[in-house]
Image (cartoon, rainbow, N blue to C red; front, side, top):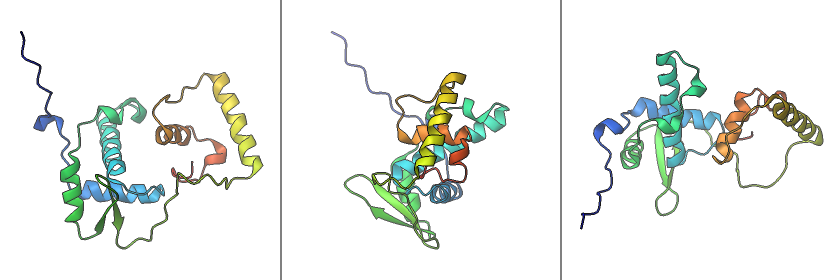
Length: 170
């Protein structure tokens, strides 16, 4: 009988290297998008920034490099680094989750779980027209990846009624 296969462990080469500068940039960009910087969101943003840098270095369009293909981020190391940065404060958000706040910036996050519609009917009409055009043009949006990725895809298509809105509001 064969021994069970061992789970693949991440080698150092598969782990993203990052420092305080990259973490601060990720947190600031989440604030700019009006998204609360939870640990998982910072990890996602670090991977997005790395994907953008990889695309630019490879001279390919940014959307051709998938952030999910970027190296793994050690969440424990990220949390410890955040806790050691004087510009940030770490808050426990349940058993395994945490969020980070900038000490010199007021919080202004969109509550994505709030069901209140703040947009006028004209907005929804314009958005519906855009979706009809997108469907006819054969545009593809990321299926099954969640609200965040769909909002990013919409923002990247420069939908007129969405221009000027933060990613959190999209």
